[in-house]
Image (cartoon, rainbow, N blue to C red; front, top):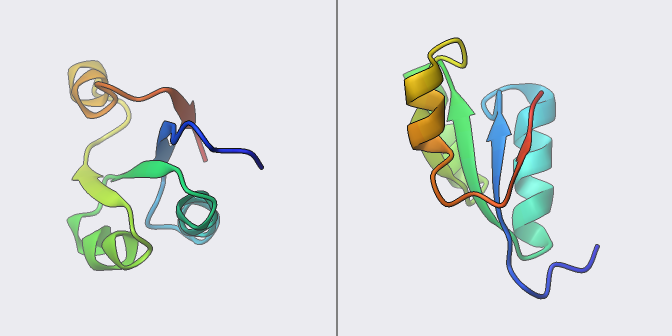
Length: 77
């Protein structure tokens, strides 16, 4: 994957198996990643993958919009 322009990508469910794997891979490929998850206990896992953690309920439109500020794309898991 060519991420030479360093995109800023949000991954929902970043504390789960698939979301965490995606966040980790995106970081390895050079992307800046924000990991969204409803569970604050997921923060250490998400941050260990190199992503910035944001605790947000994806059913909260205002919270999601705030978390996505500045993102170039979203991967919803």
